[in-house]
Length: 179
Length: 332
Image (cartoon, rainbow over all chains, first blue to last red; front, side, top):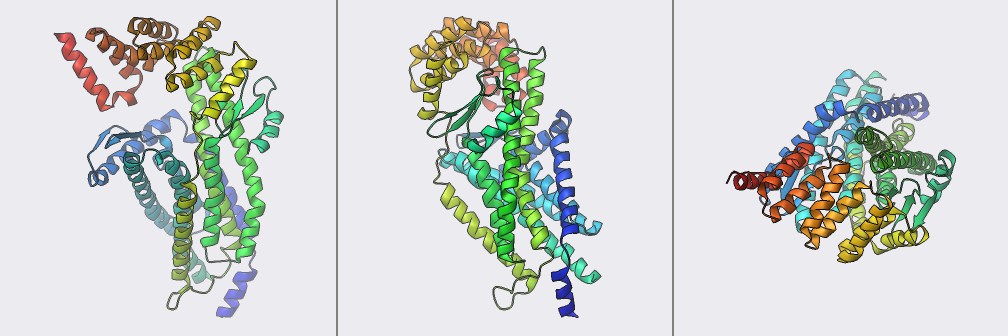
């Protein structure tokens, strides 16, 4: 039985599921590009999220020095930065949720994905901001390099890695049970 | 990337708008003779880092499916998505150039609004290109070649298939993340201030002596180098050529203020504000000059106006402190 299942897994065509997944993901991404750049979304989502990320970074920064915050501005040991739309974690969260919605699975599994992914990506983003503020205070000459080269790569890796974890942990067992 | 983008530009662009690539030592700039807009290529190198390395790291780390098949698929899909990324970048460049032209040349009546709208679209495209496409590259690869494939044997005794997959993912990701940090922390990031970049502006000015954008940008570079007299001369030339150029008046005000010529700086800032009454930075710098001239009430009026126009900067504790200082001094 197990051998038959493995054989079935190997011979099942991945194309229908993969194509459906890719089309759904791309449509959702297009939706993001069209809608999430409007002033309305800016006002109700991006600006509050940027303020929340800045506020959430303060307790951690207090462990390492004397931070100050004003709206979306953070000042830490002489280094100042503003949390912009691109830094508030909304896009990687949306891409994660788009991938969750695109994968054929039960709504229960999708809810688990959202429940795990949204706070996890928020925490990753706060860690990113805190690390860049500390680095900016210590080594302002390399902070932009780390911001552009390292953290943007890590955000993609971590968000997609989280999605793989969810798919393997919550969706694959359901497929095995159905078979 | 510049080599790929050039033919895309030529296909989709009106010839007068974007006509050349200016290649410096550290940057390659798209340059528009009509709008004067330029986009340094340096930031696009970061795009490639995310675009290529992130999905490849994930493909390597997922311990499911045949590795050679997945890498081959990534190699086939990568050029296609790369071309999409370049197209998005070119569209973004065009939108930025148009927004810049609207703002600087005053082509439309609602220049500020149109500029803001185009900048929003610009940011959306940039973000989508930077994050969504590499994510898609990995996800498509995973769905096609890993989702239906069995897990590879566990890397250590006692680890089940699923746990082994997670361990593999964590280990692969960690190794590649460290490699990324080691390799790219050492890579130079081209900056707008690089000498090679500004030599490009000087060269362009030689070819087009009346080219105001080159005059302003070269002036900014000379200002940073400390040659205020040369910068002031360039700004004045730009104003003589185009009296309505707000940036030239504003930058002239900055340079004159740095040279200690406060009254002349005031006049330049006022000229900038006469052309663009809602120039928040000009109001702010005017407040600084009035403060230096011991005119706190005038300083307060302009700093308040600046804060009302730029609410983000208004939240800055330094701005709040100055407002309180000017209020106290003005009341006396």
